[in-house]
Image (cartoon, rainbow, N blue to C red; front, side, top):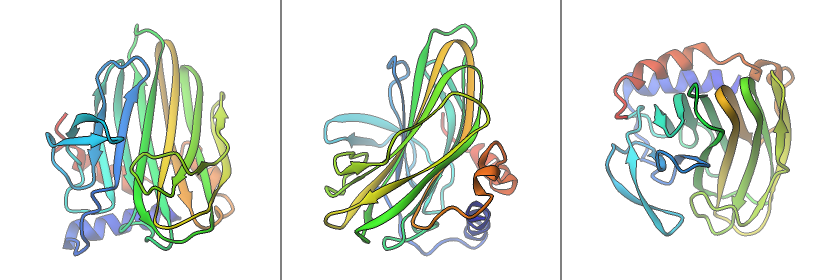
Amino acid sequence: MRKLFAAVAIAIAALFGSSSTVDAAFQVRITTTSGLGGTVLVQDELAAGAAVTVDGAATVTTKADATPGTPGAISWSGSIGNFAVTFTSALSKPLMGSPAFPQMDLNFSVTKLVGSVADDIKIEATDTGFTTSPIGLYAGIGGSVLNNVTSLTYQTFFSNNNGEFNTSGGSSVQQTFTGSPYAGVNVLSVTGAAPYSLTQVVIVHGGAGSASASGDATLNAVPAPPGLLLALTGMPVLGLGAWLRRRRSTTAV
């Protein structure tokens, strides 16, 4: 239900425009264990080629957000190292939730190329400026894995330093899945001073040869409604996926 609401919100923003300001802190980062392909960084509303600093040190070149004009929505597709990223999107404030009511969504579909060596791919979504603390956030994920995926992990983090991709404050228990379809829910307990940042981390551990995985990871201030996990297990919101695929044609790879 939350994703269906988000799909409607995106469509409305695309038709009429958005008066919300850009949340430059909202970002998606994709890396591989082997280091092949470097680091892909997509920032909300920004075009490709901007040099940015990640974790206070390394400078990388961003890829273009394929959903321009819709603050709070990030989408990208392309290749990195041994992986083809066929669909990666994320939602956060102001499109989903607010500083006082955290909500984040990370949707992904990745394929490791045939004949490649074993490698892992890490997908992270981060945003800053959340203000309600203490608070318990529900971290849910569901999806499917195929072929030579040895495992998939999901973990969420907060940081009172309020920094992008910062994991110093605390974390939910790491969820690990080895079968398909998969689904699970855990709790991230946020404490300490506000504002704080939130980060979602999905890692797909791919063995030798081809491998693929897809899923939907959510971080929400309210419990998942009955039946949500069943819906997450390989059943994407078709309207949102179709709309983002059309917008993805403008992506700079």
